[in-house]
Amino acid sequence: MQDIAYQPELRWWNHAWRYALVLTISGAAWFEIAYWQWDNLRWWFWTDLALGVFTLVLVAWRRAAPVPVAAITNALSFVSWTSAGPATLALVSLATRRRWREIIPVGVLALVAGLVLEGYNPVTDDTLAFTVPFIVAIIAISVGWGMYIGSRRELLATLRERADTAEAGQAARVAQARTAERGRIAREMHDVLAHRISLVTMHAGALTYREDLTAEEMRATAAVIQESSHQALVELRDVLGILRDDPGDSSPERPQPSAADLPALLEEARATGMRIETEDLVALDGVPDTIGRTLYRVVQESLTNARKHAPNTLVTVSVTGSPWTGLSIAVTNPLEVGSNGDDAPESGLGLIGLAERTALVGGRMAHRITPGREFVVEAWLPWPA
Image (tube, rainbow, N blue to C red; front, side, top):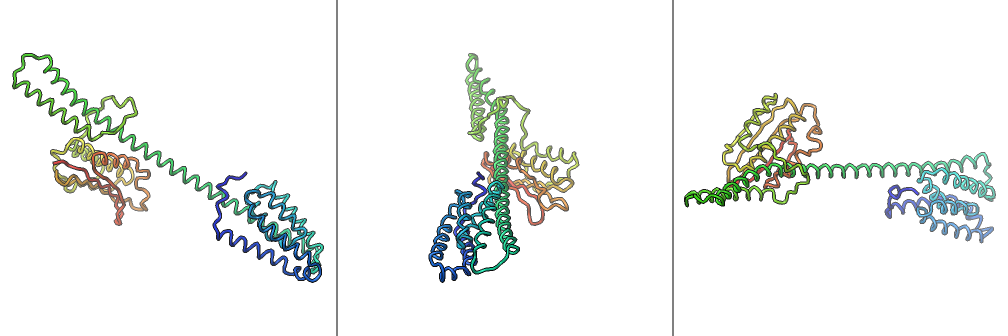
């Protein structure tokens, strides 16, 4: 049986115009013969009307049982002109399934019923040369209309399925990007925490095994332990809740960048041929390591996007702020000539990772295309006083 997605739920107005069309077809078919039935065979008049009402009610189940409903309504057309409308609707509904093994038998039944009914029509003298092509044309139009509706429904269902699949895939890629960014942050924090904890362990071991330390040396060692422990807690608090799924995350990596490495990053990018202009590049002395690494990654990913999607354009980097107001970062580059804006980062997974990173340190990040056709990455990071 055809998938339910190909049979969308009908609203009340969908039912209304269908039944209005059915009544119109039945009325046109019965109008002329009804007077003759009333004057000559009144029992036929009431029987015809009753059968029409019965088939009109029966077509309400045309979706649940399309073949039986179409067969019954067209079979009753052997003796009932008022069944013409419901029989046509049932045939159209059956044709939406686009199964010739169902359509052909019911279509032949409808053709025979129409010929038989017109054969003993007492008020018309139309010949078979007119009647047969006319009935065949009506049946062909009904079947063609139904098959077109069924094909269109199937196309819409396929497009909806593809859209749902694409949306699910994009959601999976976004989740993967966030997980990857968290894993990278966890690896960075591993290096920092390992360094600080090793200092604590070393000095604590000295206090344990050294018996010749003076009071001043013990206080100095305790101060180092206190400071290292405090810094380790500060760094750990920044990434609390991040889980590492990859066993390889415990492998140490190279020393992680900080805010002091930003000028070197810009010079490295210039050396590759990029045109970079800096505006209001604030002195970054005193920026905490966690914030500095996030600042570095924001600028690095923005430069990567500019190099990929708008090469040979001028990139403007601005870093402003203070320990009281926080750091404001803006990286701007014009869209390439001839671009309609679709050349901006398509999936944006790197930007999604940056947004996750900035949120973890208490900041925020966004990207947009300005009316002046410039792609802008903006971020704000806290800078504790």
